[in-house]
Image (cartoon, rainbow, N blue to C red):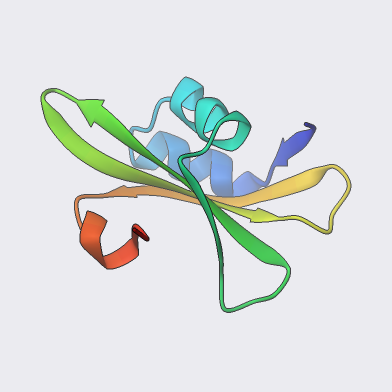
Length: 85
């Protein structure tokens, strides 16, 4: 699947010290894909382990752009807030 990183997403990856391999793994093989409030956006999510701590990596993608546009990326420990069972 083809994806393109927005400038904002690239900045957030650097600012938040997120591994680009984790982002690519999440968009190519997500644990979940959930709808955002905006119908054009899907949130690709995966649980990642960093230094023995579990995070939820959330990658926001505009699915109607060609190639699909990665808008922003962040990781959180608030897994139960965002991860759908």
